[in-house]
Image 1: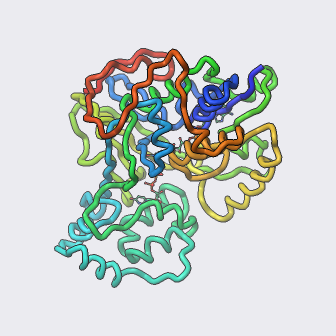
Image 2: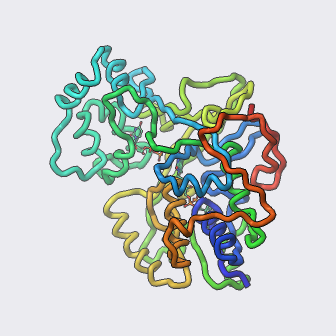
Image 3: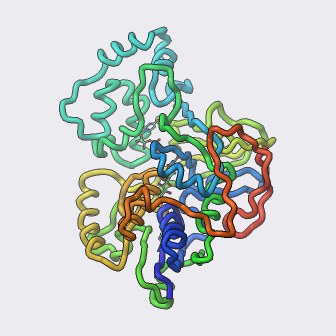
Length: 409
Ligand code: FAD
Ligand code: UDP
């Protein structure tokens, strides 16, 4: 008899599996309907030998020392500061909008103080900021909103920014300095051998059994277990009794090019003319050296795998009904981006999972997050401050059992 059946081997399911198995000596069965672990963070070496992210670019960043320290038990890191350009008026300009964005776009030579006045003049005062349109227009005015945000958001979400919660575009700040990093979090780093390798280590415990290609509905009545942790879509768990919760999907178009570098930045956003929202070039993210390069286009769509909960009032109201059902189920814990219908980043999901575990065992989160390696494991503490030595042994598998070649330079 398993103590827990965990549905989904993404961050939520895998962190809880690890904590329950190693922190509480519970027997865990984790299943995923996909043929691999790591959920949407899954990466693998493609036919050309380039490490790519199957479900679009995943960049790790967090302000939580606890989350960073917890994951550091399972991976070394490669320091990485993410940068994005937006293709606007035929130019590639830094996004988040900063001093250089304004100077290049308008052919100006403003200082940081002058650009503050510039924004103050064009911003539209809005007393009560409610929507994703309000957030941007109140900071940089309507013209910049239209060039950088309106069409990107319409494409990405199938909705006008005025129909989306403020939290969506509020993810992208506005700056008056020349900082062109996409994130400013304290910890910004990529797992040195990739996400999948990190997940292999998270799940590496004699107390954890993994079943891939397995929808939980195929086994839930066949395999005995005491409690369930569910990380799939919450509406599907309850058979859509309150109707479907809208999720936004994407189609990923992967390409490999016979050139060392495809574009001028790790990600280039295309707010306006194209059907896709952005192109990512993976070698920037992973630091891999290779004669070829692999990229991915993201085409937003309504149908398909659920990738993004859609933050708006109507949906929050439907979710509240499902949450009431979920809260009433003492035998099931609902955790993760799909099960709690939250537009959360990876680190927020790790934090949410550690919190859930601490509730399960009745300890404070800080104490509940302490990883003690099983006796036969030698753990070498790592720090992102260490100089990089990429000349390291190859990862053994790509998460679905196939051997991989190490092309990290
Ligand atoms: P998931 O990773 O979705 O895992 C849930 C798992 O449950 C899936 O593997 C699914 O197959 C499985 N499952 C569902 N239903 C069933 C079922 N019935 N039976 C069995 N298994 C089931 N975050 C960042 O921090 N930085 C980024 O740069 C970033 N970029 C992103 C880019 C894209 C395109 C997307 C879509 C997301 C991005 N994220 C990023 C968010 C990140 O992917 C999530 O925060 C994180 O993966 C959520 O983990 P999770 O475990 O909740 O869900
Ligand atoms: N956004 C935009 N233009 C951009 C970048 C972002 O309009 O150039 C808006 C868009 O609505 C997007 C949101 O800001 O969905 C959040 O952007 P982020 O890059 O955080 O999205 P994610 O990486 O989660 O897809």
